[in-house]
Length: 115
Image 1 (spheres, rainbow, N blue to C red):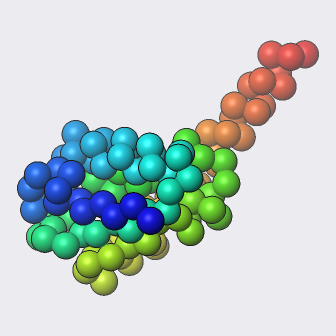
Image 2: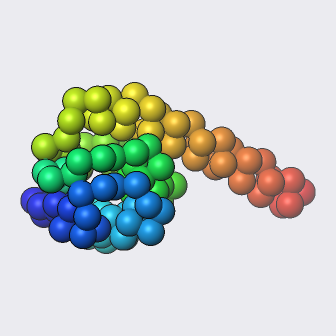
C-alpha cells in the first residue's frame, strides 16, 4: 500500500486550489494505474473544500472504468467526519453521475457517427 499525505503533496494546510487538486490527482492516478492501493491521509489539513476534492478525487471516476474497484483502492485516513461525508455523499456520487452521463452521450454520438 502506498501512503500519501495530502499536506506533503500540496505543501499547505489548506486544500482548496485547482492546481493543488491536480497535483494530488496526478499522484493518485499514477499509483492506482500501477495497481497500488493508496492510503490517503489528510493529517494536518485544516481546511478542505469540495472543489479540491472534485479536482483530486472526483476526476478519477473519469479515468477508470471499474468504479467499484476505484472505491476500494483508496483508504481515507485522518479526515474530519464532515469532510469524509462531503466526499462520500456529494463529491463521489456527483462525479459518478456526471461521468455516467458523459459516457452515455459519447456512446450515442459514436452510434450516430457509425450509421
